[in-house]
Amino acid sequence: MAIRRVKIFSLFERFWHWSQMLLILLLMFTGFGLHGFHHLVGFKQAVTLHTFAAFALLLLWAFSVFWLFTTKTWRHFIPTINGMWKVLRFYSFGIFKGEHHPYRKAYWRKHNPLQALTYLMLKIVLFPLIWMSGLAYLFYFLWRDAPHATDWLTGVALIHTGSAYAILVFVLIHVYMLTTGHSFREHLMPMINGFDEVDLTPEEEAYLLKDEPEVIR
Image (cartoon, rainbow, N blue to C red; front, side):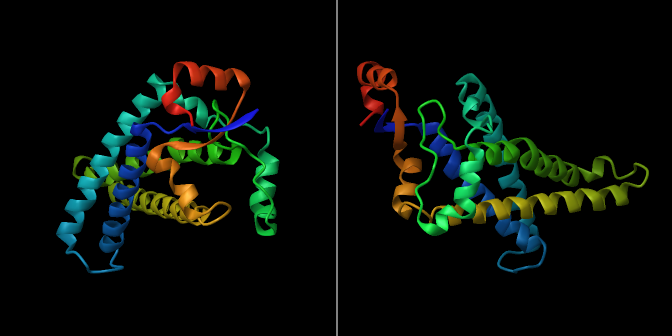
C-alpha cells in the first residue's frame, strides 16, 4: 500500500458541504430567534429567512441524492462492522492518549465505519424527520380542519425541534472533531481543495498515475 494525496472530494461535494453548512447555520440562527432565544431579527423576518433556507436546503438535498446515485458515491456511506470497534475505542480512549487513528482512508472508502454510520443515519433518519415535520408545520393550513389537528401540530413541532437539536449536537461534535488529531488546517483542507491522504493499492496508484494524473499528488 502507498499513501498518496488523492482528490477524493469533488467540486460538487465541496460545494454541497459548505452550502449545507451555511444553510443549516442560517436555519439554526432563525430557529433560535423564532423560539425567543434572541431578538436579532424580527419574528416575520425570521420566518421568511427560515422558510427560504429550508427550501434551499431541500433543493440542495434533492441534487445531492441524485448525484450520490448517478455517481455511485453512495457506496462510501454504507456502514460496516469491520474496524468499527477499533474506531469506537480510539474516540473513547485512544484519542486522549495520543494514539494514531486506526483507520486509513482508502480510495474506495473515504469514511471510517463510524463516520459512514453517522452520515447514513443523518441522511435517512434526521434529515427526513426535520424536513417532513417542517413541511407539515409550514402547510398546517391545509390540514388544520382534520380531527385533533392541534394535538398533531404539537407533535409535529416537538419532532421538528427535537430533530433540530439533534442536528445541532452533530454540528458541535463535527466541529470539535476538527480540533483533534491533525491540525485544524489539515482537517479543513480536504474540503477546500479536495485532496486527502489515501491508502492506495499498487493497481489503484498505477491507474491514477496513468489515467487521472490530475487527481493524485
